[in-house]
Each structure stands twice: as structure tokens, then as C-alpha cells.
Length: 473
Image (tube, rainbow, N blue to C red; front, side, top):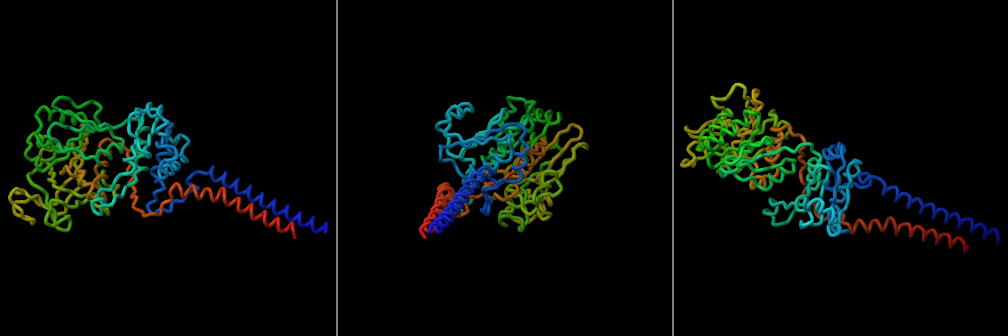
């Protein structure tokens, strides 16, 4: 009997030892997993890779050579889990990057330090800071309503742009110099839409306004932006622009078909080697959005021009109400013009657009192909320019209606070309239209409780029952 009891005790002790070892292994494994980088413990199963970051972002973060702090702002326990997980991936990539959560109600001192104490801050807003500068990203910029889908289906679908905003902010706060764009005003120029203004700032450019009637072009103006003036320039204003170009300035000029009537502005373009001719460009049916509206069409993008050679040729640029850009007889020999946006050979420029409503070419129309966008470089002065035959390439309604076109990419690539600025990024937003297959905070917490708490207890209980039964045999 004693031998039997000893054997039972021996088997029971062995079972208890195994249970303790298993429990110890589970605890150690959980501690080890928590110490691993997020990228090794989380697998992104979403089709659009909502919980992943791009190679471009990884390159930016790993190249940091100064300390940067990213604050995820929100009420304690209510931080956005998508953003939180994304920032954890950033945090794993560099010791120079520090990710912190900031309670918007308790972090008053930090918010005051960066001038945000009086702001209305929503959960999910982000603050990126370096020693040189800071950038605040409101939650409304992280989740942006997809207006195109909303107007189609009346369903509120948001695009998630957390990665694009944060990576752009990293580039901005660590940039040695921020290129300055001076947008000329005072001549009823076409206003820039909210979307393209946001993208310009996201690409780490500073956008300011300049009235040539009262001010000269500042020395720190990296790009002079002229956006289709409706009223003509004075001779003095045009001379300021010429002087700027002769000093090696960089200009971005959007023209409208009405600019044929603005004589001083037109002469300024001739100084740039470009002639404007009266008319509106019409395209053939295959390239038109609507064959009955041939002035709205899809333009050919050059695969060899500096601006567009890196862009996919499987997509298009949408052009609305353009005029053609023709080489002037007055073009200087030192000035090289390179088209990057053109119509097909079947296009034409309708000269008599006020009274002629035909959609087919007439004898008075100008034949294609017609240049809509070109670059220019003057080897003598160092001047560089980008000129478009339409002010609508980045218009708000165009970008909203054609979000998959190259329009926005061409616009930002033009700015980068002018000032040789390579720190801008183009990380597309990700649609949140992915159904209900989302792991929310409550689901994650339940899984944590089950694996860390319940499972070890169940294993221990089973071990105890086995030991108890063997002990009483």
C-alpha cells in the first residue's frame, strides 16, 4: 500500500512539475513576445495593407539622424488603434524616433509648448516634433471623407492617410531647408483648391502669397507660382518676373485659353519662348470623357520627360479647358523646351470657339498633336520653368472626380523638378471600405485575456484534476 501511495505521489508530483513548467513557459513566451518588435508579432491580413507601412516610409525612418518625437493625442484609453499600431511600426525602425501617447486633457503643458493649448483636438490627432520645428496633424487629415464615393452612393467612406501624413511630417520637421512657393495674387488668379494646397504642404513646401503691385519677389522665393491671371499684369509687374527669371529663378505658370487676351502676360510667355494662340483644345472621341464635350479629355503623358518618366504609363492625366503651348519665334537659343503632356495627332485647337459648336475639325482650327505641358531650362541664366496650358490640372472638382489620374502626381513632380527637391513623398491614402473584418480594441483585449489569463488557468486546473485522480487511485 505504501509503495502504491509513493508511486501516486511520484506521478502526481511529476504532473504538477509539468504543469508548472508549461505555465512558466507560457509566461516566459508572453514576456518575450511583448519585447519583440510589432512587425514580428502582428500580421496584416487586410487586403489594402491598412496595418502595414511602405518601403518608402521605412527608408525615411531608418535614415533619421536626429531625435524626433511623435505624440498620438487622445483621451487615455481611447487612442485610435489603427494609428497606434502603425506608429508602433515606426517606433521599431529607429532609436532616433520616440512614440508617445499624450492625453489631450492632461497634457496641457506639452500642448501649450507647441501652441496647441487653445486648439480643439480630436482623438487620433498627431503631433510630430524635432528640435527645429513641429507639425500638427489633425484627425480630420488622417481620416478624409471620400467625396467621390459619397456622391455616388451617399455612403460615408473615409480614406486613411495616416502613413502619408506622418511620413511627410517626419520629412518636414527634419528638413534642413523648406522650399518656399510664392503664389502671385492681385489679378483674379484662379484659386488653389483645398486638396492641392494640402498636398503641397504635405510634400513639405511652404506656400505664401505675393502681390507684385506692392512687393518685390523675395530673395528666398524658391518657386514663383502664376495661376492663370484673369486681369493683365502691368509692365512693372512683368518686369519683376523677367528680372527674377534672369537671376535664375524658377517659375510655374498655369495658362488659360482666356490669356490670349492678356497682352502683357502673353508677352511674358513669349519671353519664355512660348506663344499662345487663340483657341480651346478639342480631342478626338477615343480620348474624351464625353464625345460631345471634346474640351474635356485624357492627355498623353511622356515617358521620357524629366517630370513624368518615373510615372506609370498605364494611367492618364485628365485635362479640362486647355489651350495649346507653341514655340515662339523669339525663343532664345539657350532655352530648351521639353513637352511632357500632349494631345494625340487627331486633336485640334478650336479657334472660333465662341460661335462654332461643331465637335469635328474645321479648316480654321489648328492641327494636333498639341503640347499642353512643358518644361524649360535656360543654360545661360539657370532659369527653370514648368508651363501648363490649363489651370485646371489640380482643380478641386477635377481631383475629386478623377482620383486615379496622374494630375496630382504631375503637379507635385513639377514642383520637385523646379527646385530639385527630393524630400517630398507620395504615399497614397488607403480606403477604409473593407467591410467589417476589423479587429477592434475590445477584440484585441479579449484575445489577450484568453491567451495570458484564461488559458494558463485552464492548463493548471486540468493538471490539478489529473494529479488529484492519480493520487486517489
